Length: 313
Image (cartoon, rainbow, N blue to C red; front, side, top):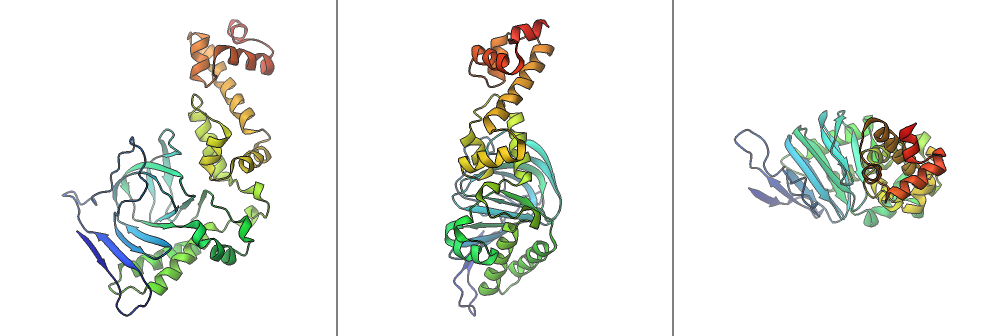
């Protein structure tokens, strides 16, 4: 059942929508999206949702959950208990994850989010227009507005974000909702999620690549060597513009994204040459080289020998 309403004694403009149906097993309905289909452009209503002019907040109940979206706005979520399941970065392969209570994630606009959990916890989700909030966010974070860019942030748990999330949850569950108070709490939570630890705070735009995000990008590279791993694609995984991503990646790894990908492809090709009898052309395509000659040229430059010579040796 869908229900909408507004607090009569609160001048703040907002509405809420709540889906109250549950299955016979007690699992909230409509929390299963086809994770093999193209991602949805909007988040289905899974819990009690409250929308303001520039963002919305939703308290999603616990239950089995399959997630597959690419939202036009920025997305943030924080879990109220631990969670274990499978997730992917930017449409890659599903990989196991183990999340602690009150960990959170912030994703930039148009960032693919896909995953599955058979017993997902209660989650607080916020969807907001980064451009609409940019000036207020920059003021709250005390950084120049032109340096504030949407990015992927994986963090927590932190005491203040935990306290804010719990207050928001209690207020959403209350019978009488104060729109002004709830909006202030949600905005404060977004600010705290965007606040990096002191050792990660930077003023230079090239330092936007958080270590957790870099680890996820590297994990994606290793799991998808046969795929297109152009710098634009890798930058999209991190939510950072391509030329800034390339500089930040080299600062942290010592290699350009292109050279790093080639290095990982050579390592994997060497393993396959040693452990299998597959034709060299098949190994070249399986590890992401455009052709056997491309792999041969890369081997000569990096190892001084051809793939055939490496296998013979």
